[in-house]
Structures are given as structure tokens and as C-alpha cells.
Length: 200
Image (cartoon, rainbow, N blue to C red; front, side, top):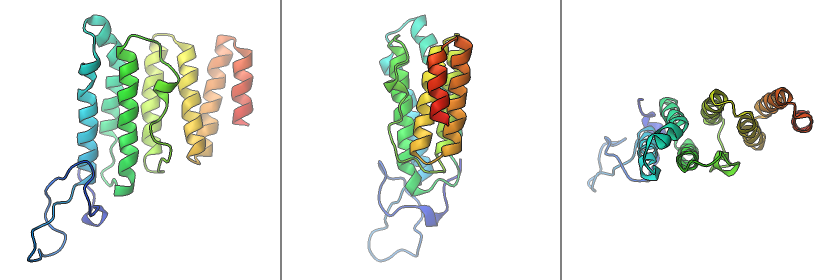
């Protein structure tokens, strides 16, 4: 995707620097290099995706286990907005960190733990939170295909909590209700009641 306007480019490095033309006519001093924030976020995400293989113990099971994490990582890459602002860069680092943790849990062959689905950053901007929701949706769909309803409930519950902490109250209610619906289908009356109470 294209980078942000020059007015949105920070004056200091974010995880390295990428050469760009100066925003103003160069001074006699050496020309400053400033990063393209969207490009840096993309590079960081691609590196996180490439690290998936480092966690793989090998074999067909590992490939199957990695699929949901790879799907989520590629989804996040495709959703990096063209007008990404510097203040959103840390949020995208959080998205990448989430994907790396999620991938490690899946590649280890273990169950999807609550911690593996937690977001690495808590102070999400309004511009990034919807993309995080899309990443979670992919994870939920992946677990739905293997009929793991309990994992779906955990994922929706985590997303609801993060949405609430970010001030996205309609999203929080939406995902609490989704968790309640799945719990009802499982015959889990206690879980359904908890989700409905939280939504209220």
C-alpha cells in the first residue's frame, strides 16, 4: 500500500529508517532519513510472518497447525491502511505481536490458550481496532471449521474485553452476544448467562 502523506511522517525512526525525499529543501547539513510508517509496519508484519517457520517442529501437523496464524497474518498485512499515521504504528506492532504469539501456540500443537489470544497492546486507536477485529474473526472461522466451540467463545470473549477497554462499546456488546449464542448452542447455560450479563 501507498505510504502516508509527508505531513504524517514522524521526525524520528520507528524500528529502522527508510530513505525518503526531504519534506523541505535540504539544509547544508546532511539530509535526514525518515521512515514511511506504513512501509515500516508492513515490513515488521512480514518479518513476524516469516518467523513462523522458526517455531515449527516440522511435519504435516505443524503445517496444519500454522494455517490459522498464517491466514490471520496475511489478513493483517492486507488491511494496513494507506493513510496509517505515526500514532497508529505502535498499534500495528501490537497486531504483529499478537500474530506471533498466536502462531507460536498453534505451532506448538497445544490448545488455544486465553493468553495466546490476548492483544499485546492495550491502547488501540480507532483506526486500528476494526482491523484487529477482522483478524480475530479469521481465527474464529478457523476454529469453527474444526468444531471447537469453546475456543470460539474464548476468542469472542477476548475481543469483547479489548473492545470495551478501547471504548468501542457497541463492538464489545456485539462480541459478547456472539459468545452467548455459541454458549447456548453448546448447552452451556452458565457461560451463556455470563456473556449476556457482560453484554448488558
